[in-house]
Image: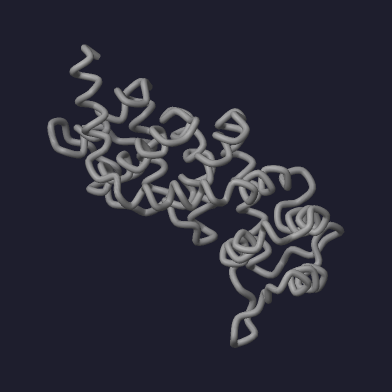
Length: 234
């Protein structure tokens, strides 16, 4: 029995859950203890049941198969960003697709991508809370900028929409926004230092949607990939 970081995460040798973590280690070419720790942290952050581990690994395997990224890179980036992503309401599948799209487009270091996304998501969380007002963000200026591209930041009851929902609305209009307005908007959302990452994400939104669609249909993929490794003598 293995206990991680004092959390109530127990893995009993020989059960299906442990088999999933073993397969992940082989597919990601990562030490079994490290890959288990990565995935346990990610699933803990998203408050998933460990019975869901095989489905999570299938989705990671799908992105690995269809994007210019390795499973190890995915695990590292997820480990850096999943806690804050969950706090702003970003589903796991979406975060996985974001990481796949950004690293495929840039070949940036996966830890750097995870850290940058984490900073962006934290800023979005603070904006959602209504406490971010400084020299580079003013809610009134943000609302005016959004109205100019046809997006209201208000719900029908006049409460503010969640930033993650606003981001999706921006993505759906992205190709029709001029470059300077794009930069203005993403700087307000992501901040001065991190805004290029958000531009890359939005520039590659079609690929994000492609990955999301594929993640819905990849049941059993990790086992299939592992069988291929075994047949090749791995």
